[in-house]
Image (cartoon, rainbow, N blue to C red; front, side):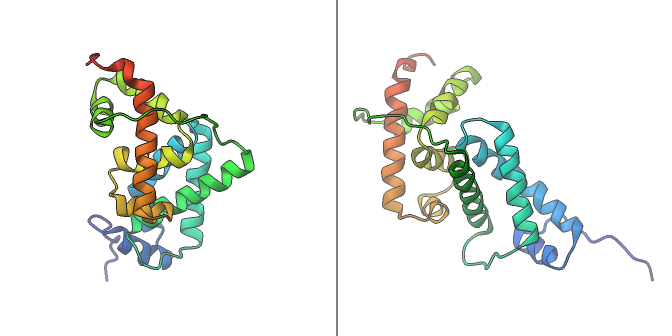
Length: 191
């Protein structure tokens, strides 16, 4: 009887998790490859672009994920993974006592969301400026912006990840985008 390596391609994250629970190292590797960008991206944005901390968080998340797989399937795997990542970031921030204090909120403006989306899609230079300003937001405003505009999650998915209501997500997104609008208004007409 000829033994063949298991085919990993085209398996869902749930299928890979099932195989991981059975000790399948190839499935563990594939699950890591499929999801490492998501975890690293959220951690990078949470810690204002600090790649060393983001890398540490990524390692902690995948170590926890692969040594204590407690995904119950009550939500999408990616929603659960984002929640795991946010929790790891929050724990690390508490250890580092590193929350960024921005200060008072800024004025209201119409069309904020569309304007910020347009800015984020523009040239690399403008994207870098926007990215630096996103990094300056408090995590409670930064994470909804990152999850919505960089990761493409819906309001409901963000609410599940952040363990809050969709109304809170909408409020935090609005406040974060208004802060960005006030800081990036000088870029109007630059693109």
